Image 1 (tube, rainbow, N blue to C red):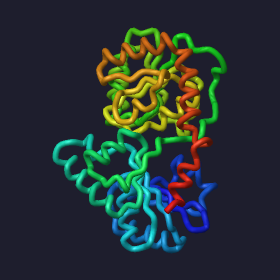
Image 2 (image 1 turned 90 degrees about the vertical axis):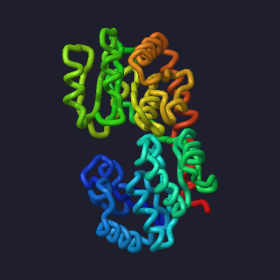
Image 3 (image 1 turned 90 degrees about the horizontal axis):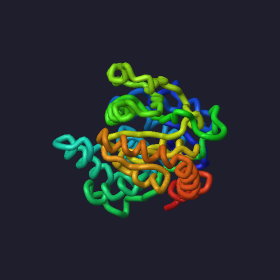
Image 4 (image 1 turned 30 degrees about the horizontal axis):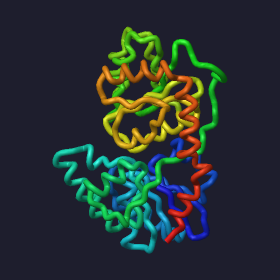
Length: 323
């Protein structure tokens, strides 16, 4: 969650006081508010401290980028005069399904009453907010995820690897489908490199036992070595508009993505979408590897046209400071 005051300094509110986010942005922030409770549920003590923090710095705009941050930010609006922008990174209230899904959807609808702008980061999220959650259109804004091109760190300067290297960057947990990725590359002339850690690590390592072309590289904070690889692969049961895919695109990697959430909005002659079956993923890998050079160029072009924050930063400035 970011808090922006009337004199334009930026304040960071986060649950991880020693994480990569604080390390990356602390030099740009006037002050940082850290509390682990942000990722664990609602705490009255945390809310009171955040209220005091917001009053102290005369915060006028809050950009909330997680579900719990969204709850805190919108409750603040009851006590102080602020503009609340809630960023939806995929509607978990929908993909959870059944009874819990209905409850969370109702909560999202109620919380929208205390929100000035709900920023949807994909057209898929925007339509779901309108048609399923029933959030009034006047509350919604669509700006696809954007980022600055990542620094091109890596060893490969020209050409592609032999065998080709497929890259997955993600937490090893639900809703990611690393099981599909591992089964799909078995027997293929390519390598699957998995960057990340999580509760499914040991299970996935057992699944990949005996496969020489599956490499677990572990967690790497601030990962940006996309240029060491040839293709980016993301299998998932649900997504918003994945930032890791945009980072890979900025480095010129073709994309192979599950056809969920806003992933289809990232594919335009630069990769392939697949339904979450081993057979479809296997065919998509073969297709992309056969067209890797043209798709690599298409990724760079698409990123520069639609997702480069250097080009589109005014969209966010207008959102933050507009009426």
